Image 1 (spheres, rainbow, N blue to C red):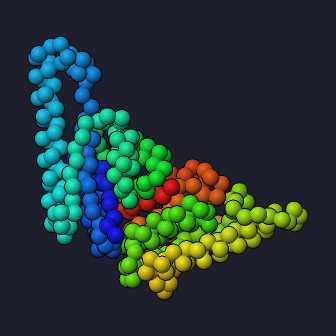
Image 2 (spheres, helix red, strand yellow; image 1 turned 30 degrees about the vertical axis):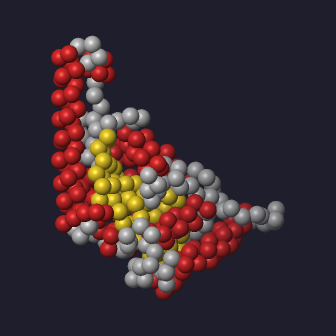
Image 3 (cartoon, helix red, strand yellow; image 1 turned 45 degrees about the horizontal axis):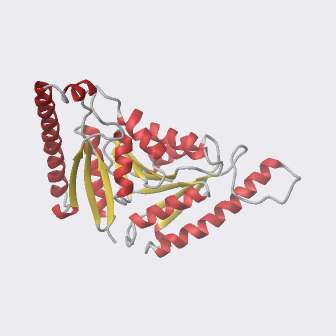
Length: 309
């Protein structure tokens, strides 16, 4: 089964990092296909209105549109050549440059959903200096609003092929593992670490509690253990079904000496991982996206984050 990646790009160095990362993923993911997708710059509404009645304005509008299209096709073609040089077959790469219609992020999401892409890959920052950065605008909107398509955010030059799945035992974490299994299916050589920060007061687990007495913190910790143990059973089955042997999976748990996001970043640096996979929402629904994901996105360095809804 082929897998489709939508590379949302511009002519910035951040998009170049995303392209290199996506190309390197071909060595661990079979049958990858890429679409280089660019949303053309906004044209002044004044010029658009003037072009309806003024011949000179209409001619100027056509000139600007042609210039934008040519510039886009030039760097998109260069990106395609770069992918080919990195071993991607030409027939696995498509190029699309389209005018902005709904908004930059919404256009990317619309195309990704209609095209049934398996992931959207973007640089952590992008666009031009006179516009908002990807991290502050477009990528943030993609992360917030992509309800169906996982978003891969690439920061800098990613060298390591080591993968970490940061989990909390939630359904969202299990979907993240499912996406990871699908993308890395039939790769018996890949090594994956399942990383979990043990529960503390303020963290929750999707589990029915029958006990109403006793120490609350101990109850939460015990509930977390039961929840995560059940999670491991389901996760390991998914890896097995994907052709990834259990001996390639490392389970690592740490005690909550720091906040979860900081613990993930510490492990990423210590273990020299190149990719971290996280579910959009954790046990308390807003936990991962509200606290952990934003922290990790802000702190990753030469690393890629996959956010899965």
